[in-house]
Image 1 (cartoon, rainbow, N blue to C red):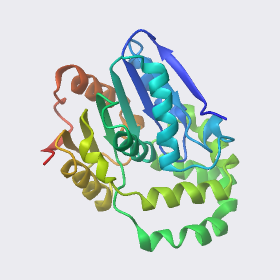
Image 2: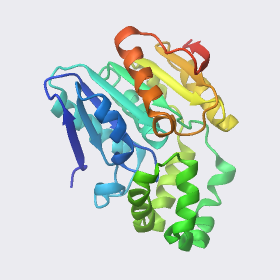
Image 3: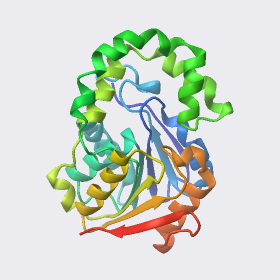
Image 4: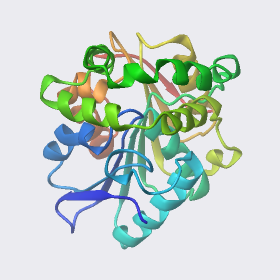
Length: 263
């Protein structure tokens, strides 16, 4: 089976591909596809998540391979923009590494690239122990709040959390906590914007710095007073940032507290 995806906007315009984070699916980009109706927006669900639950076991590399095929099928010589959050940002980095000349612009938001070996060994036992919590509405509400999931999206989030198998969550977390920047990432030729929130964990901020240092085409941005999930927490600002970066090569004022360039 192939990845499930939805298409929006103007199919004759530049292609904009949105890659969701772990624990959610393509619906997290609803406010973006509405804002970018003048683009050809494609929003896939990654393997084992959302409507792609039956598309084989999740891995970052396999996801990138499938997305490269999807882009090649849909782009037809058009400009290609990839926007990824968290797990989706890791997939975007892998995609850029495997097809370095395929993407014109990429926004890499909150990607972990520093392996967390000490935490990884606890994934299986902790997920097995806490599996019943995945079906708890109260627990889902706490998780949703941390991810900036809105009230209008909570039921979708809760259903997907409740339906996710423990083995799927283990695979996703193991991939997430093992990911490192591929050597080939340095060859990615597009313009790359790397963002992270100032309130995120130190490992996330240091990951953003490592990504920027790995490719001379990167611009790194630390966003003030922001945790993990700016696209859902402040969608209007996030959309403005994308628009400014793609069309003017600039960044909006007010929320940007640090900017670095790739080495």
